[in-house]
Amino acid sequence: DSGVTQTPKHLITATGQRVTLRCSPRSGDLSVYWYQQSLDQGLQFLIQYYNGEERAKGNILERFSAQQFPDLHSELNLSSLELGDSALYFCASSVEAYEETQYFGPGTRLLVL
Amino acid sequence: AQTVTQSQPEMSVQEAETVTLSCTYDTSESDYYLFWYKQPPSRQMILVIRQEAYKQQNATENRFSVNFQKAAKSFSLKISDSQLGDAAMYFCAYQAYNNNDMRFGAGTRLTVKP
Image (cartoon, rainbow over all chains, first blue to last red; front, side, top):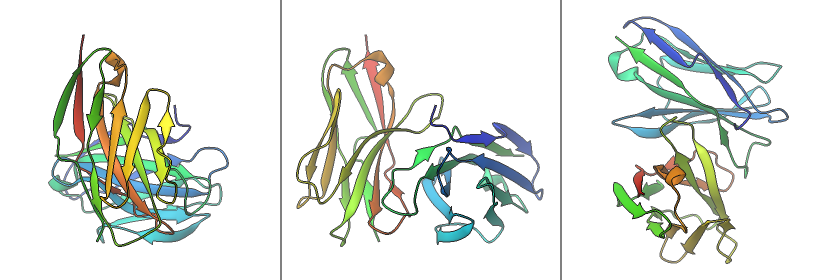
């Protein structure tokens, strides 16, 4: 158990809908990262927040957004969902913004029908 | 752009034997970090080992060790005394210094035969 929690574990929704994935980092960690793991794209970095501020952006679609709250939990919002958004979404956390090992949560499996 | 290549989609090893998983990467940076993550059937991503590029000494964690060849941009993982619980997907990952856009390889599926 890495100490990173993600809810929900599974999510089934329809195309065009909007969902919110939630992540709580390890106690003491200020940085949160979001990744997408899909069959065709592999593991891709989406976005990083550090102490409430966006720090780095990867291959995140415009339909996706994230935020980190004062209690350091983070939410990833996915809107106008498409079939291709079906994937495993991981959250990871680390103590600082750089040079830190990232510890992954168990993931949220999203299925868009 | 940094890329990570794992050329072995699948590997198998006999229980108690040793297996080596390969990883190469492409970068123009001199300071960076390399990782091996394990993803068992539960899909949880578990850190196996980490290597800082500035360190010449190869990292070791119990039965897991790496062979880091900076000039060749190679970072292989050796698993000694393989156990059934080692069966998983193994991902090699690269992270540049001061940049948290971690890049992953496509993964190697390791099967351990009893």
